[in-house]
Length: 296
Image (cartoon, rainbow, N blue to C red; front, side, top):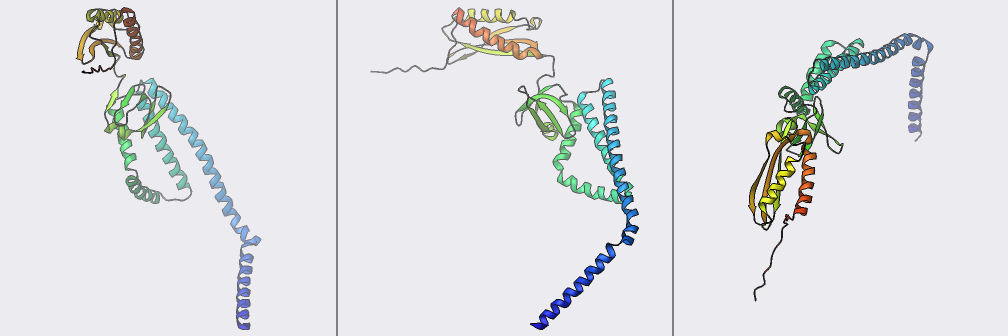
C-alpha cells in the first residue's frame, strides 16, 4: 500500500513539473512578444479578407444588375436574363473565394486538385442537380415556354404562370398566389402544355338538353348568345352543332375563338347565360335519373 502511494505521489510530482514547464514556456512575455506580430498579421489578413469579400460582393451585385439591364435593353428573353445572371453570380463568387484562399497562402495547384477531386464527388452526389442544370439550358435554348406563360406539367399536374427560370429550378405562380418550384430536369422529361403560347384560343363548350326540348330553338338560343358576346372573335366563325345523342339527352356543341386572356371570363359568363336563358325559354337540362317499372 505504501509503495502504491509513493508511486502515485511520484507521478503527480512529474505531472506537476511538466505543467510548470508548460506554463513557464507559453505564459511568458518573451514567448508572446515573439508571437504577437504573427497573430497581428493573421488577424489583419482575416479582417482584410472580410473587407475584400464585402466590397467584392457589392461589385458583383452591381455587375449582375448592369448585365440584367443591358440584356433587357437588348430585348433578351426574361428567362435567359435570369439564367445568365445566376451563372455570372455563381462564377464570380467562386473566383472571389479562390482569390481569398490564395491570399492566405493556399497554392493554386492545391485548389485545382481539390476542385478536380471534389468535382467528381459532387458530380456523383448531385446527378439530379446536373440534370436540372442541363434541363435549364435546354429550356432556354428550345424555349418550350418563357417567363409569363401559363403552363401545365402533365406528370404531377402542376400548373401556373412562369415567373422565373433559374439554374436548377423553374418557379410558377398559381391563380391563388401560391409558388411552385419545379426542377428543370422534370420539366424537360415531361410533356408540357403551354396554355398561353398563342394569342387566341378556341372556346369549345358542350351542353345537354332533354329529348323532349325543342332542338332547333335551343340551337338558335345558343347562336344568339355566342354572337351577342362582344369578346368572341366573330370573324373566326361560330359553330353550333349536335355533338352526340346521349342515353339521357341531346348533347349540343359550340365552338368559337377568343383572345387567350379572355378565355375563362367568356366561358364562365356564357355558362351562366345559357342556364338562365334555357330556364326562361323552357329548354330542359336533363340530369341522370332512372325510371323503375313494377310488373304485376
